[in-house]
Length: 137
Image (cartoon, rainbow, N blue to C red; front, top):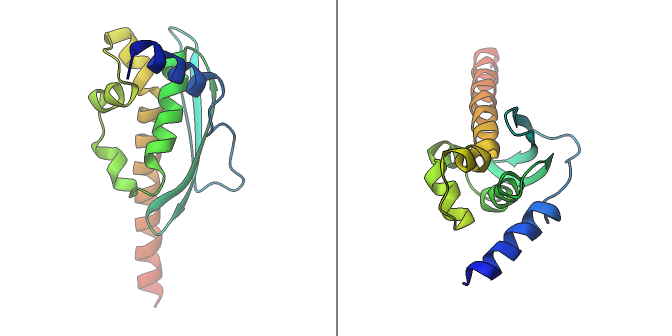
């Protein structure tokens, strides 16, 4: 794929993401911002049987932060929640198909950091609820 085509595709993901929006009654909600540049992302997700059923994104900022949020939403659909905990900045750069310096890497990982934190909290909460249910049986 040519760089020119890839950049056009990233602009499309960043400005008019097919995953743009907010889900009603989400199982997971998370947000993160980068005060040094003004990027903000918010992700909502529905979870079913330990998998991401649907992920939506909202936010504003540079194309890298917004496109990476959209690409992450696309990547996560149908995957186990734990999969996101294994992802890194290198994986985000691969999704973007870009070489990123430290500043742009922060933009690229904004949505990843938000979702990783939210998934950790969700897994702890659901594990605690499952333990309570077992004790009540």
